[in-house]
Length: 388
Ligand SMILES: *Cc1c(COP(=O)(O)O)cnc(C)c1O
Image 1 (tube, rainbow, N blue to C red):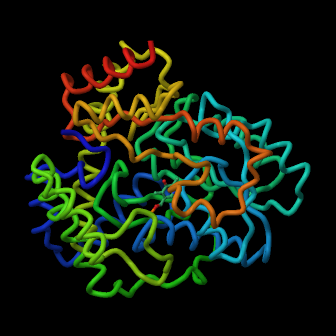
Image 2: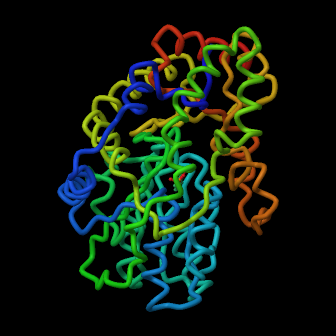
């Protein structure tokens, strides 16, 4: 029984650590300092990654009110939501199918066509390095602000050997559910350029107690639901938890840059950061196993999930489900995911054919802690047989 999501990054000990984590007085300061030492610059903590991104974009809006922001045309709903929250307009760039990310060429063309674009967000989709060298050359030449969104790629090395988060003027981290640094929620902004940060949205308040409690209990509730899944009760419980809002749906939280991360969560984030390199190594080993049977998968440097295009996705998912591998939660099954929020996005499908194709054909192979090598081999085998 393997799920892609539903708290799968929390085995019993992780769940317990999250549930009982308590802050020392300087946990948040320690996290801030760690991020500053890692990325260089000034770090700020937020309730989630989208709020950190919105805060960065608010800074850009000070100099360029109403400007446009180039974003990946294959991404999470919250990215374009953050752009709107800052009063700016997203411009979706189609992806290079081998990178799930826009290329330098696509960016250059967009900048020529649309001189309102004043910032670019790169995101190393699913841990696959983007062509940062070309993108950086273009943004530097045209004096466009470069933002690195590391929600999928904390710990990544670009093709030229540089660390992710060492290039952009702003760096965003997400500590959200199913991310590499999963503490259920939380985010950070690192301002790497020397700017006046006095106008950054303030970040001293805590989210309402109910929200914080829900984030604290999420690994516990989902752990129980996963345990009870084999006797059907788990599925019912999960629906009940969603219905009573004891757990929230992904991408459903709001943007509020005035909320900070609670200190106990900062303590959890410090732990995830300490374990990050080891965790990436473990994920890469699983990726290699998948690759033995599925040579066409897209190789990632921080495989938060492993991406592969399949011919008949419905059939593959059905075959996996028959073996109790529930991999239906997909990044992304619409050009802007999750699908339930897609209708509210004005997405230019005709200009982003590669993103539309990827959304129809991609599946994600899990690399979280509950997956061992035998399981990975079995999953790869099922897919290879289904696709043969
Ligand atoms: C998840 C995600 C974020 C931030 O998400 P939060 O849930 O707000 O922490 C930002 N960018 C991308 C590409 C993401 O997938």
